[in-house]
Image 1: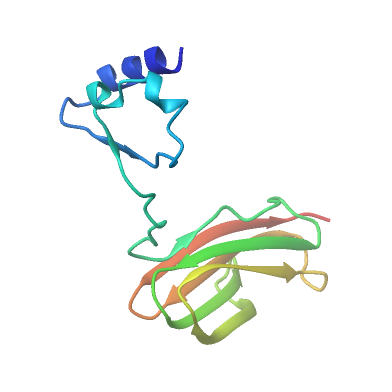
Image 2: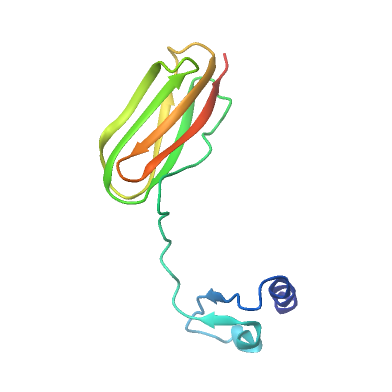
Length: 139
């Protein structure tokens, strides 16, 4: 079943497309499948690559009531500045104006003092660009 589904999926792809997967040392289960015929290369699992620029996950929850969780990934160490602005462009909150390590990060904004409305979150990374998201605060 697995081989048929994989073969069907590969037929939809470009013939030059190759799949790389990690194969455990004990190949007893995998010995039944002809992975070479499917275009699967056996090798060590690759380390997850960081993106070449800042990425910002969708804030959760959104709309929110009081606290929102913000997840972002920084491609390399550098200065990170995170700001929240209202629809008129006025800064409402400022976080993390500091040097940050590369990788995934998460912060929370507790907006108890802010009125209900639409806000814009911006994450700036020196040399890595910026990313933005819309936040909706409800009461």
